[in-house]
Image 1 (tube, rainbow, N blue to C red):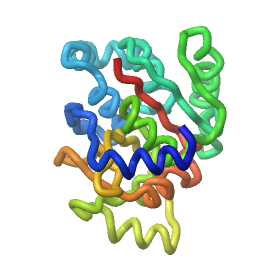
Image 2 (cartoon, helix red, strand yellow):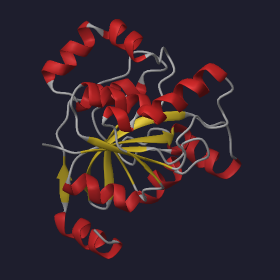
Image 3 (cartoon, one colour):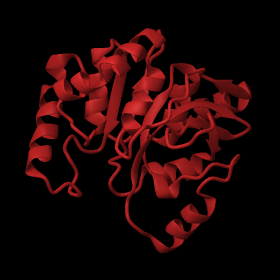
Image 4 (spheres, rainbow, N blue to C red):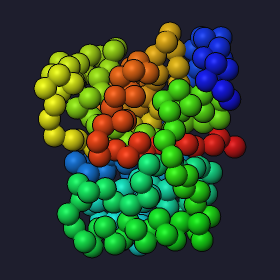
Length: 221
């Protein structure tokens, strides 16, 4: 879908939303896992909860989940998906050689495990076009730059951060829909189920240094 086609389509649909179960993260490190749990069926979600420690141990990420780790979890539960990233490696903010090597190996082995990783930046408009035509998307953002237009969560902090800068706060969200010119998303750090933001604000949050523009597109059956 071209840029002009996606603009026309988004204007024409009005309101659209994928219905998923909102899951809150339980720890300060598991936002990505919470996003995976939102995507899973009820049966697979229960399986993950029941064997949480074992699955995390088998996947090998401990309390440091990277976007490629989320892809392996999706593959484990037979969820069709595709990842886009500007860097198939742990970025330079990571200072642990063990983590750098582990992430590199996961990227290297991804094709042999049926995991599709695409080099390149998926624009926020392309992300939106996917959401309204094919399925949800899990996006890595700088949490300090993302604010909700409905509940006003983080609005003041994000404005200060935009103007004065600050420390990167990596966080995963699930983009699920479009309404009245705004993107709808689930934030696993929040209690309420749905948030909304503009394309411009989401673009700023997902293009911040440290995100590598990571996004996982989910394809609904």
